[in-house]
Image: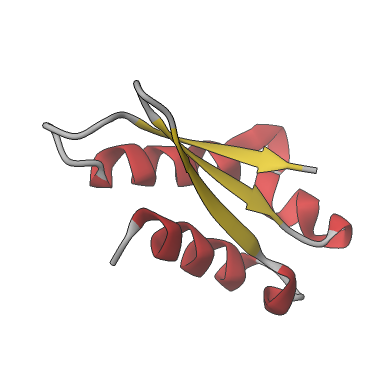
Length: 78
């Protein structure tokens, strides 16, 4: 499972409109950024109270990143 698939699976499991989940991978020279977009009505479900869900998603992705690979970060785009 790729990082994009992992983030898409987690986000789709949280939201009411899983068909509106859009995940893109942007690779730079020094890192990889995973951009997550969801329906505006579902934004709170992906972020969570005080950002706890977003932090959990980022922690899981960081833990799944290979040690010898580029660092991966997740950005939630409104």
